[in-house]
Image (cartoon, one colour):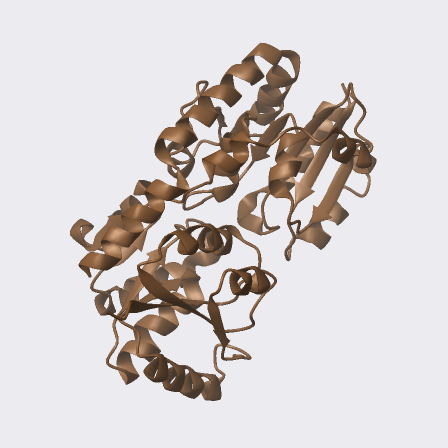
Length: 366
């Protein structure tokens, strides 16, 4: 019997939390044929998908109002004739709900990844409200995202199924600290390394992290800050720290393919995000066994129990972040306890094989 076809539609397969989640998960859901359709470009992760045997189709959309791309999209979807269509992230979600459902016989299921809970994203929230009537069912990656859509978008709770992000626990259990990699960034044996893994977008709050790091550096020069990721805020962040004493100890590493190894050479992980869905970066840091400091928002509370599996601090409160980092720098036993507790939580709740099985069951029932 032929396997059902699942068409996954996304803007591109550049390296991000959602894209890496797909790369980890889809190979484990082998009861279906998976086809990935990218709207804008294939993206830097495309070769990894192809190595795993997945077909990638790109319609080369030049912009939201590229009408010829919509004709290509409709033609491609009809040719594939999928049994299930899943869309990811804002552009694909909206295009799926309107263009695909209006001009083809196929229904789409948006996989909600975030809350858009920032004033800058009011258009996204408005679009979600206006198009919710076109959606019969949603997937969401956390209870917090589900709650946000119920309370703020007006989606009925029975129309949202929550399936969290997953991590390959066995892979992280086998990782060791690479001292040569650590020294390649001029991190001496007695130095303290802080890492932040996140695209450089305004909602990730890097400017607050840089401000906190500057305050800590004035008291302790034997620290390094590794910032992994890239995005439109890079120029603003470099401008912000142009006169910082700590600027030479802040390393902007850009996009990296060795994030697990970078986590293992670091001493703590910090994410000053203003809103999330379910942070893959936090889950990966927890799986790596390093203590996590993150903003006290509902999305992060789904992952972190304060002072047990990490430390939560108030949004936009640099002083609280400084104090939390200083506490962890001074207390090695606390760092070890938080890291071990976090690692155990990922093992119990976010094993990629369990997550893939839940997705498989969901697809089977559609």
